[in-house]
Image (cartoon, rainbow, N blue to C red; front, side, top):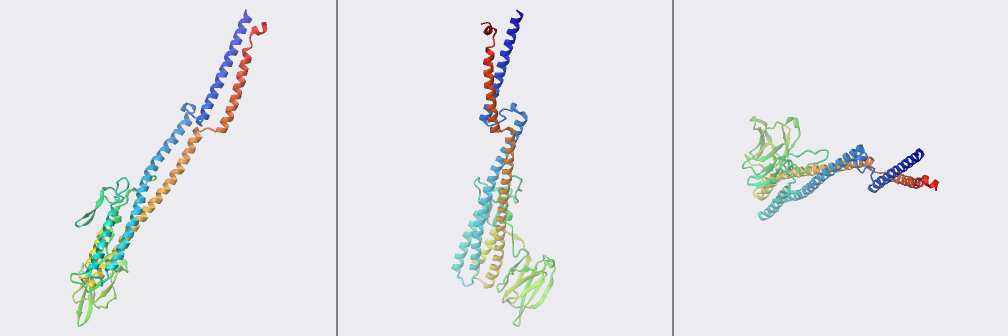
Length: 402
């Protein structure tokens, strides 16, 4: 009786152990098949909590990079359009400069001057439209730190900047989407950038170039007058510091084409001045690109009245138009630099994303070659377990009794 009970117990244990091993191997095969189908070592967080957390962090950071890149692409598109717009403005301003030179020809008739001025006015309006260009999202390209839909308003007293000057700073993942319209279009130096030369009231027979600085340390920032006196057919000039009411140069003989130098400034005088005519000098301020163009248009329209006046106004207009073109060209260069920075950011972000993808892959991806080898091994072991179980099923006392 005891032997029979022992035999029944041993047989039941053998059956139970065999079934447990079969179930374990079958579950292992199912899990391995699931991993191979998904291509991942970690399908659920419970498979490897630490690896699952690392993979999730990598995916979150990659998603953030994708978001940053979408924003950067929007900014890049706006800057590309701004750079192209500035290029178009530079081409139009070059044409306007050519018309200023053409308008300086004293042989033009009044009708010819009006025709030249009309084309200049059309160019001016086109450039103003370019300055108010908006991107595909409706944002002004030159709105600075914030503006209305039209940052440059053509008012009665000239164009005004209806926006907040300045420009947003670039960050490690972004660049400004707008350029500072004030520094681009509204901050052109007058004259030669240091001082301006103008004809006094009633002066038309003497003029000068824009002048230049020969000794910056001698500059005073004062206002000056160059007055001409004609006595007995001899013309002399006197330079007076209007700020201090003192004569700087007195009674010097005048010759057309000569350079006059005083207090660190030099200018070339031209023409045959009448008695009492004068030129005035003062510190240079700033003007807008549109103010420069308006002054050039007015000079061409009024050029037929006095050869000396048109020559003086054209000389100043050319200098200021060149300064305006340099300002626009500088802004275009800045846009190009920002586009280059955007390319650098994109490359850096791509490198970070590759690194994060590698981190995620190390954490959860499956080595398919090793997995296939393990699967075949596990499948063989399962087959052996099945065969073993079949043999165990035959281990019954009745098989021997019979």
